[in-house]
Length: 173
Image (cartoon, rainbow, N blue to C red; front, side, top):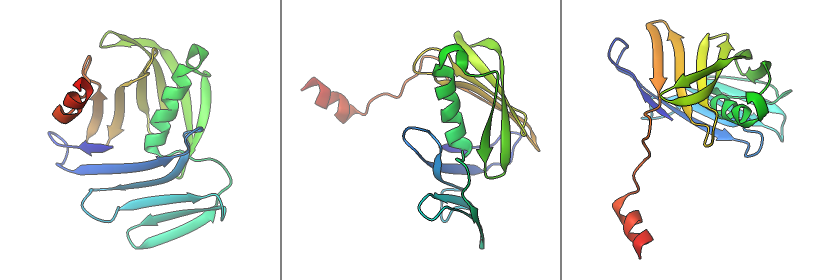
């Protein structure tokens, strides 16, 4: 996932790579940086050795792997899975990130760009996430406080990536 900041925020790019467990959507590894070299932050969850390894710059630390973890990307995908459950998941649940435990509280359903969404409030971080209740359970809105003010990301309604021209030609053949 790539995010380009600008406007009232400093003009920076954050590139996040997340490797997920295919069934549980928990993190197998996560890296974040500017996309031009070695990641500024990286974490690996090695189930064979039972260790979590965190790297930031030249610093490295390990700790025992005692629970399943999410990273920022896998947490959003896991919220999509919760939304797909009957009733949009439990009223309160927790997820573990390397920085600590996150409390996830269900909010009242809300309409976002014409789609009925399940809302979630995440603490710490005070982020709001809205996920479309019907398949494909798109992430419709994310509101995240930062040192520079609120960052709000919204899905563009009714847009889908157009297939490249060669893919369209192949389908016609």
